[in-house]
Structure formats: C-alpha cells, structure tokens
Image (tube, rainbow, N blue to C red; front, top):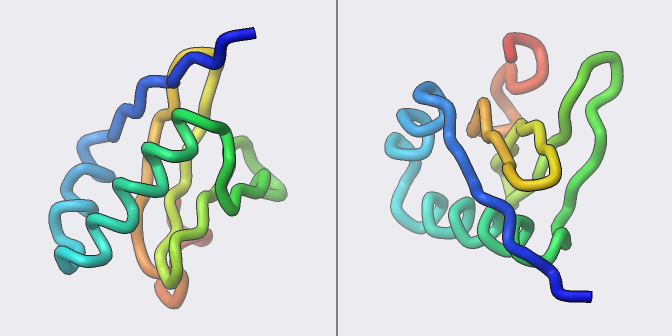
Length: 87
C-alpha cells in the first residue's frame, strides 16, 4: 500500500496566527503539520465535546479537522491562551 500525503490547508485565521508566531515556532508548527500530513504521525488527540483534533507542537496547539485528502487547520496558538475555549 502506498501512503499519500494529505494536503494541508490553513483557514485565513490560522494563516494569520501562523504568520504571527516567532520564526522558530513557525518552523516547528509547519514541520509538524507536514509530518502529520505525510505520515499520520504526531502528538494528535481527538477533541472532547466537539469535532476535530489537536496537534501539540511544544507550547503551541493546532486545532484541525481532516478527511481522506485534506488537513484543515483552523487555529494555531499557545496552549496557555484560550485555545480550546474560543475556537
């Protein structure tokens, strides 16, 4: 079986949040999203009480949904903020 890479799509809000991160953190998030899209491996858990998943990248969280061909990131931010409450 050949694994296919999923396409990573950022919502407009997630794209702005990614741009606002420090360069080192931005690189880590991009690398983690790419690795997850390629291999399906990462620190990912299903969100409780709502649809979607979270990818943990150090102090940052990426909230996303996915289907067979895409990973849609809807929020990127620090865990210490209201990551889960407002998104």
